[in-house]
Image 1 (cartoon, helix red, strand yellow):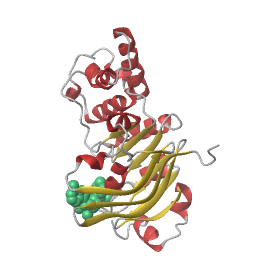
Image 2 (tube, rainbow, N blue to C red):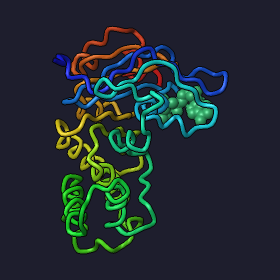
Image 3 (cartoon, rainbow, N blue to C red):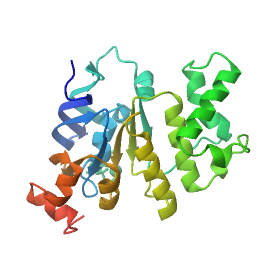
Image 4 (cartoon, rainbow, N blue to C red):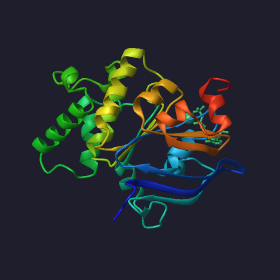
Length: 255
Ligand SMILES: Nc1ncnc2c1ncn2[C@@H]1O[C@H](COP(=O)(O)OP(=O)(O)OP(=O)(O)O)[C@@H](O)[C@H]1O
Ligand SMILES: [Mg+2]
């Protein structure tokens, strides 16, 4: 029996870009029922480490990953791992909303179609509606599903990208600064959405916004110069950090 509810376990992860080491011996568990926030100064390796969790570093020339990363105990770097399938199970949402230049409907339907998740048009339409509902976007777009996804506002586009990730029934959603291009109202909606989605998906969010990390996450990981300096309960980390470097960062002494 799994006792710590770890959805993803990373052990002894190193990442290199050519000769340069960007991640140093990082071990971390992502729990199924929690939101995990990655924080730390620019260039400390948050995005690099996030990408090791669904093998997105494979797409970067010169990037090399060492160590052990498991999804439900299964080695995601194993030769037999189907990477396309893996990235559906561990979905990703990026800093800049990146809808396809296609209709709102097609943006969400694309994944389920290529993964063969719908047996009929009606079933596909159901998946699209349910995904947009879960992403908190349905009411705003239900009468304009054939309009282009790129015609939506930034905040709507980001929720569309979340709906697109949800549509293939992921187990984990990775978000790399999903609100940094959004205004405060759109940001608040995404934060609400993250809280609504918690429990259904394991969620990892990279953020530069300490208040955001405090609001949405239960666990926080602080990275500095490629190392995981501190990892623990968000509330404890923000009120009583164990490490001096964490304290300096969260009190704004550098960043
Ligand atoms: N494609 C790449 N090729 C070479 N080096 C890279 C590449 N991507 C990142 N790096 C380097 O790896 C280190 C970690 O970068 P990374 O983007 O993971 O940091 P980050 O914590 O996400 O920063 P930010 O907060 O600015 O997004 C940096 O030194 C960066 O220059
Ligand atoms: Mg980054």
